[in-house]
Amino acid sequence: MRKLRGIKKGDDNYERALVYLARCRGEQQEYDAALKQLETYDKWVKDKKNDPGLNRKKIQSREVSQTEATYYKALYLAETDEHELTLATLTGFEDKFPRQDKFFPLVNYRRLLSLLALELLDQAEQLYLAVQKAVAEGKILPMPAVSQFHLARGFLDAAEKTEDETAAAPL
Image (cartoon, rainbow, N blue to C red):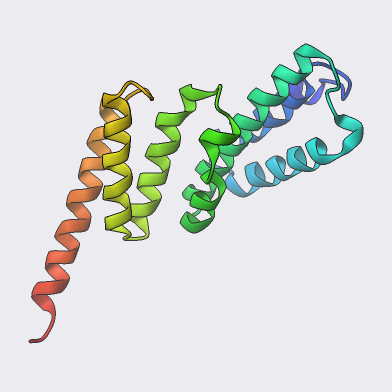
């Protein structure tokens, strides 16, 4: 982290460094600190004096950095059980970052987990079916097998919980 902090504000990689600092905090499970670092990044990006102008490298860095910042913000919000905010953060992700499609399976997986955590099973199922259709049509990459397993497990756990609550309900 020391090297990342040493990157100067005018450097082409400064934005990436701000996001990587947040990721380092997240890797250490310091989610509040990671979210605070991402707020610092957001403020920096919104400041007009930090506009990348016509600098091609800074423009590309901005796009990648904003994509990563959005995804990791959602991830850290989910880790702190802020599932409504997670979903709000990921709203319109594909439209905002259309060239960053490698994130789409991760974003959909995170959305599905948050929907399951909020027990919004119908919405989770609709999203899951929409993702499967998009994969079949070749519009997006499939989720990794491990993600599919965890998702299936989440659906099963939610269904079992619903069955248990129904069985325990007085007639």
